[in-house]
Length: 252
Image (cartoon, rainbow, N blue to C red; front, side):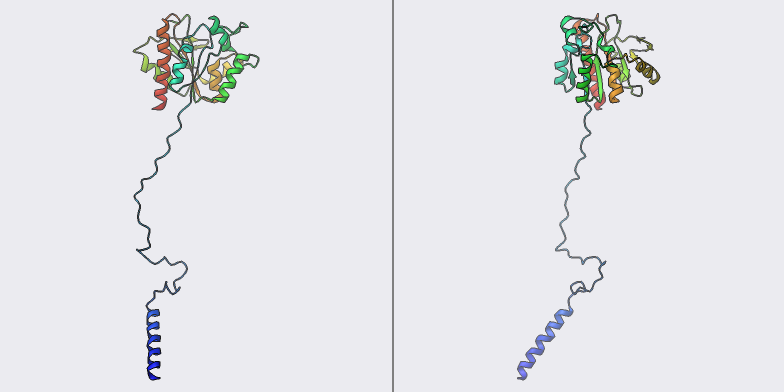
């Protein structure tokens, strides 16, 4: 009997001793806001995974329109090449004019004076296409039958890209030193109407595709002109050079 009591007492003392060795956290005695006990065996292993790279900024949609005037075909003749280079291209805007080598529409009107109106089917078709393909930047390719040098008409007074394009190409092409369009006088190949002039142009609602794109989509829009007297291959090369130079500058 004494032996049995001794065994029970020994077991009891052993249990108490083991219970006393537990930490306060094990016994649930820590306050609620206490930090967890440090348990290196359970801590997650540190990782050396690299930070995810930020997503690249979306590329600008550079829209090129061709064939507004049917007797100015150089832009239209390179539009397949432009599409292959990643431009969003629409043309010819005046199919009848291109087919008949005629500046005007079949009804005799000038398409590039119809974008402030709603009674010209050809202009409305271009507007609808632009709504489906809103431009971040637009180039409208033309030729000047009476031009003596190349020039750009830029809608977007706060943007310097027109000057940058000319500076990049002036060693390859002759630019008109004093181009003029309606009430606007330019210099060194660039016509750049100011905001007051652009607002005056809107009053008569007689304006072209470039103005419409700038006013409707808030994008810089440039009418690209070269002399119609240049050989066809030179005209095509110039149009292509302006487009690719603009693309490079916008992506830098």
